[in-house]
Every structure is written in structure tokens, then in C-alpha cells.
Length: 293
Ligand code: NAD
Image (cartoon, rainbow, N blue to C red; front, side, top):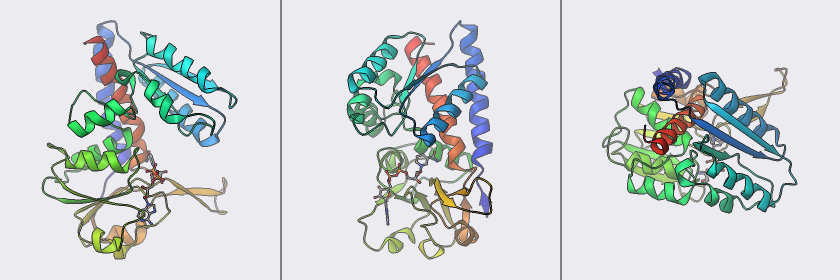
């Protein structure tokens, strides 16, 4: 059984990013990412901090806008418009979820699609469906695909079952797996909360991508011998034996599923580190496309 290390592959992606950053620096260009946070959700704050830190570590220009929870829709849109017009910024993301009074879809639509490094703008969703390489693909599924490629998992002709149909993970994952080319060409089934007899479907899978949001949901009985399992889940479960009182687990019951697998990603250290690495990579891509370098 092969444990696919996201930490290792993310390291490789970031090394590639560093090389591209040096190349751009030689041309006098520094890719810039702006992250906008509204409100004080602790998990969102932590995500924003780690994105900012990763940018700085790599030598990217990083701007953090931390706005109060009382920020109005119009004020937020004004910040987005300002960033759209800022030549030092090539990537913009508004951390999800915003407070309830903000219309998130309208904010995403206000971001310049050329700077939409999260890949949530309708133009980029369409480009993914059209297999247009100039588009931006959401970072988490893009990272999952890269893990499959780097681990030498043949997706061509394989039956891939994606569990989850969110716009952030499940749906773009399915589009990537069915697209032509490396990490694609799979026969894809998408399962979700309304799927009947999930096990009957997942037991046919050569590759399973679990993006459900329920700790340890995928059990050994759901998986056939020799399957490849990518666990996207990040779930907090209480654990009083640890000082912070919780630990992070995936959507897969790792201990019972792993022995049946040909390959599996762990949590933590699997998909998680890939997401931020792909964000850096998307920011550099945006910079290259905008500057033509
Ligand atoms: P979501 O809540 O938007 O979507 C969950 C999906 O699971 C839904 O489409 C739903 O239909 C499906 N589902 C729910 N119950 C089901 C069931 N019983 N059977 C089959 N399908 C079922 O969540 P999301 O944003 O797609 O995230 C999924 C998981 O991935 C979460 O744990 C989240 O924390 C994690 N995540 C991780 C990263 C990362 O960087 N590793 C990034 C994004 C999300």
C-alpha cells in the first residue's frame, strides 16, 4: 500500500513556484496575491494567515484585507474593484464563508476573472468545462489531480467515483477527471447525499475522491481491494487526550480502509498542503497571463 504524501508533492510544486518567481523577478515582475477576509471566524482567520505566510515565504507580494463583520456589500465590492484595478495584484480571493448579509455569489462575480485564482467565477467554471487552459481551476481539486499524477496513478480509462458535488471540490474534481489528458480521461461517477446505495457504486471504483465533510464516513465496506482513495475531508473531532482538545480527521475511516487500498492520502498531510501550493501556482499563472511573461 502506497501512502501518497501531499506534504512531499506540495514541496515539489512550491519548488517549481520558486523557480518561476526567480524567472519573473529577472524580468522585474513580482506576482501579487490579495486575500480579503470579512468577519472574525477563527478558522477563516487561520486560513488567511497561512496563505499570507506562504506568499511571504516564497517572496510573493501579499496583501491582506481584514474587514470587520459589519462591512457592507457595497464596501466589500469597492475593495474588490480597487484590487481589480491594482497592477501589483494578480490574484484575488475573498475568504469563504462571508457573514450572512453578504451575497457571496455577487462578490465572486465582481472579481476580475483574470485574477480569480480560486477559480469560482462563472467564466472560470465555464473554462474548466470547456477544457480551456487559460482558466483557473479551484485549488483543492487541482491539488488532488496533481497528487494522482505524481503518485503514478493511471486515470485514463479508470472508473473514478467522486463523492460530493460542491462547486469548490466535487463538481470541479469530476470535470478534471473526465477532461482529456494527464490526470484525466477517466470514466466518472458523481455521488452525493441523494445517491441510492452508495456502496454499490463506490465498490466499482478504481479511484475514489471523498469530499463529504463527515469524519470517517467512507468505510472498508465501501471500497474494493486495490482501490486508490483521495481523502479531501478536513473535520475537527473532539479529543480530550490532546492539549487543544480536538484533532483533524478526514472523510475516510483510514485505519480500516488503508489496508485494502493500492494507494491512499493521509489526513493531515494529504490534500491539505496541496490546496495552498496550488493557490501559489495559480497566482503565478495569473501573473504570467496578465503580464504576458
Ligand atoms: P460541502 O458541504 O459543500 O459538500 C459536501 C458534499 O458531500 C455535498 O455535495 C453532499 O451532497 C455530499 N454528501 C453529504 N452527505 C453525503 C452522504 N451521506 N453520501 C454521499 N454524499 C454526501 O463540502 P465541501 O466544501 O465540498 O468540502 C468537503 C470536505 O472537504 C469537508 O470536510 C471540507 O472541510 C473539506 N475540504 C478540504 C479542503 C482542503 O484543502 N483539503 C478544501 C475544501 C474542503
